[in-house]
Image 1: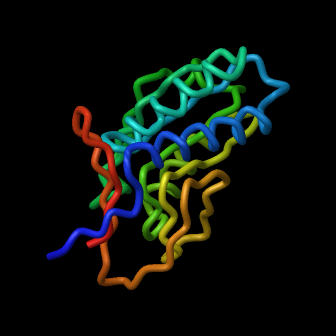
Image 2: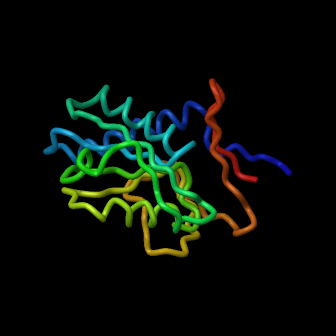
Amino acid sequence: MTKEIILNKEQIKFKAKRIAYQIYETFVDEEEIVIAGIANSGYIFAQKLAKELQEISSLKIALCEVKINKQNPLQPIEVSMSKEEYSNKAVVLVDDVLNSGATLIYGVKFFLEVPLKKLKTAVLVDRNHKNYPVKADFKGVSLSTSLLEHIQVVFEGEEEYAYLS
């Protein structure tokens, strides 16, 4: 199995900064936004977006970790915030890769159970193989891949890259 690097550490940082500017432009009238990252790589990417947003804006950023069983997204979703903490706020749901759209759409459904000011989605890589009617409002890179190809994002210490295998 060969790994074709599609984003290196510098490119990921650049994509995160660009997405942060897009998020800031979208939420410029807000005082606070919730950046909700889907557990593991999505949450790490959400942390990177939050850091970039804090450097470029005066927005108050609340980070939230969202735990979704990716094999069975119908199982209960756990979040690191109470409903009161994100209710009536602007939320950005973040994941690393948008594959079929199942994880993102179940995450969106979860957040729509309370009133929100605005809900947007952000991903580092959009694969264009969606089975659900969900889109990434903010994306780092969009790739057309075959269904047999897989994209993996690695955030391990100093190692940061996305690859196609």
